[in-house]
Length: 109
Image 1 (tube, helix red, strand yellow):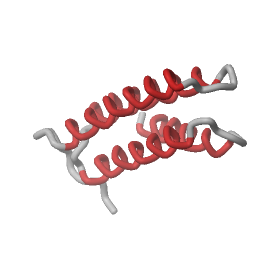
Image 2 (cartoon, helix red, strand yellow; image 1 turned 90 degrees about the vertical axis):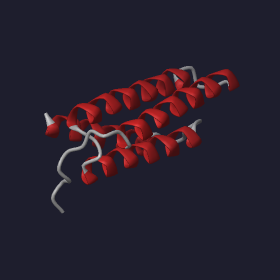
Image 3 (spheres, rainbow, N blue to C red; image 1 turned 180 degrees about the vertical axis):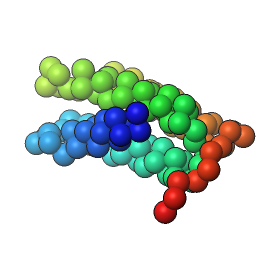
């Protein structure tokens, strides 16, 4: 399960690099930052495997929204606003899960 999740993370991180030009560099950077926050939470033990999976599904949902917005070759202001709102929501979820009382043992270094 962990290897599958890691493979998905690596693939998701590689997708923006594969795109020659992107219409959403801010969204891409923010997605990367949020992925790093999740990874840090896993390493520190702040996130349980269940919380991590839930947050990853949320990140994947935002990524799909971005791909759908870019599909027609033009990302409108309305689509950008919708993406920003979804990312704000994800950011709050990440914060909430990292700062709740649930925790696991920190990952070995």
